[in-house]
Length: 391
Image 1 (spheres, rainbow, N blue to C red):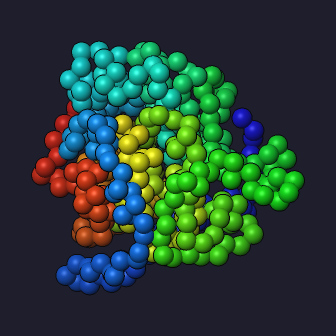
Image 2 (tube, rainbow, N blue to C red; image 1 turned 180 degrees about the vertical axis):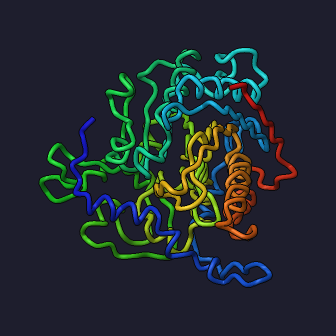
């Protein structure tokens, strides 16, 4: 895979766009008062289009609605990095507990088949220090192989190809596995072809889009990463055309007083033109984009990499707020998994004094997702299995 030669100022600029929701807070957050908050008048979107499509047997919340398995291993880190063998053991314990299967192959067989084209959706936004760890992804691939999935049926993907490279997702680290981003450059580091068109359009599916009645103009440096302006956010052809099943592997991070886990990793990683959505529709986008068939009907499993995460400063990488949660959270229900992850991050934030009390805004995207029948957001209705592996 090509080594990115993107100018550092551009990288910092796009990293800022990824975290814009922390500094340009959504309108519903600004309407908070001492007794809670009042959501604003909703911005029109095309969510009704998504709801017209019939669901199928694997649609969210999947095979195990309202169920999340958390596996903790105190010695899951070696030399400040997640340990692959520990990650493999943690994932094994989670898969067996989630499915009730007697073997790894049987457990994975409940979600995927050898004929499936499988996309591993990672989150490389924060670079090598705080992105989905290659160790966890390698553990996932090993278990897929045990279930009879050949390497040529597996790809690792996210929105920006250069960020995948920065985070260690390269052909050297993952031989035989395709690694691809919706947004990419040519060998000379250009986002455009000879005619001046963005290369990324070749990996965008304009038949699928999230429309929202808000827009923003981007400058010349930002636009390559947004792909387009206007009120349309188009889905990546990676998820609409190139894969049959998606395994979602986000990292355990905060986003202000909320979290950026399963739903956010899917929604903002699968569409273009997201800068406008961070500003006004953070919660709505996180929930509603996941209700469209390219995600709703393909994401079969969520594996939150919580071995190393953060409790403040997310979704970027701020070392003073890094923490070793030493945990994985696994489930087919992305809302239930997000709710468990939210509880872990909230507990840490309260303990560290960066947040004095829980705020209603933190769970809003999960409540919206619940209303769209994407999963279970009420903690008392979630079957939360906790496993502690010996060190």
